[in-house]
Amino acid sequence: MRRPAGTTWRRLAVIAVTAVCVGYAPIAMTELWPYAHPGAPAFGEWILAHVVSPRYVADALATRIGPYRHSLVPMIVHSVLGGVLMLLGPAQVLTAVRGRVRLHRALGVLFAVTVYASMAAAGLYLARTAPEDAFSGAAFWIVLATILVGTVMSVTFGVLAAVGHHPDLHQRWMLLCYGFLLTAPLLRFEWGGLPLFLPGLSMAEINQLATMHLGSVVAFGALIASRSLDPRKTVAGMSGSWAPVPVLVLAHLAGAAALAWITHASLGHGAQGRRLLLAYLLPYAVTYAVMALRARRAGREGRLWAREEWRLHWLALCLAPVLSVGAAPLFERSLGLDGLTALAAGAAIGCGMTAFAATVAVSVRVMYAREVLKRAVPAAGSAARLSTPLL
Image 1 (cartoon, rainbow, N blue to C red):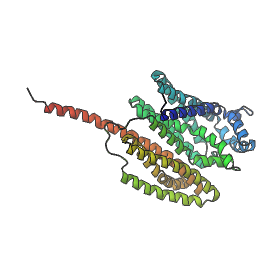
Image 2 (image 1 turned 180 degrees about the vertical axis):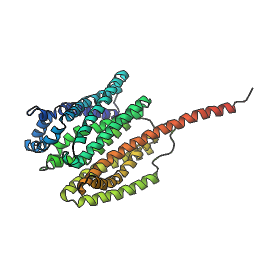
Image 3 (image 1 turned 90 degrees about the vertical axis):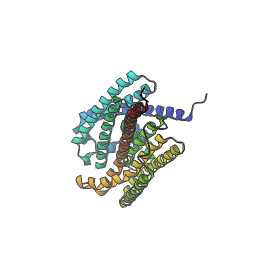
Image 4 (image 1 turned 135 degrees about the vertical axis):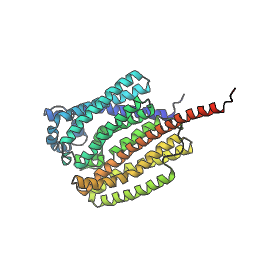
């Protein structure tokens, strides 16, 4: 019997993510060893030096000695626990798929505690490091802080959903949380891969390009995974849409205006501004196209819940540039950043933050539908009793 194409793709995706996570775990765990003991093995540095060049790696790490040694213990704790999380994530997926409920819950508790501990260590590092001292500049510090908050809030909402017996929402939040964690290995892929297409750029410059879209890419990946695991055509108690066509039209107009402003402002900053703009716009365009097509297809096929979820995330994506335009001057004035750095920081966090907001909207949508259903059942029972003739 031939396996459905969707099942094959899901299996391949799980295998690919598992391979990335297992392969990255030892890299994460050993990344800070050379700063504590010079000459200690660091697999990530060795790989990058052979893929790109030893000079490419040496130039980047030379600027990290001071900031990392200032917070070396929390950084080592963060990196080692990050490697543990890379292993726990695939284990959680496999135990869920195979129905190992008790093991899944036990590993889930360990996963949540490890996330909190790892993010606490990362928060200590960020608190001790001035934004301008972060690798590649203040924009990266802002992105790291945003991902940290998103990760902690996602795992918290995931735990609350599990305690409240909402497995569908628990699944969405934990996938989003793990997506934020996957920014670490994906960033390393870009450190090694982008120099093949953009030779001559330093790792710091490559890092700036990568941060323009990593948050949005992982949030989009979490959405794809959530949708592929949810076969429901509708959610009981749901009616209408929270993202009707007029609202989508207004969001498109606002988003288009904001994108025009971001484009104009970026082009005014020379070659670096153009590179950052391209790194932002290409993933944005792909994400937009997929969301639009999936929402339309779900509507044509009568899968109302899938259409609603795609629409809510599509709406959030349209509003992401609006948030970025508002954030850029705020960063510029409050942190004293130059125009390009503030613009890059605003653009880099926009899609990830609105994707998080869309997941909140999806969760509230489901909870509201269930509350409507709960209230409808007693009302129907009361009506039935009133219509029963007295004997």
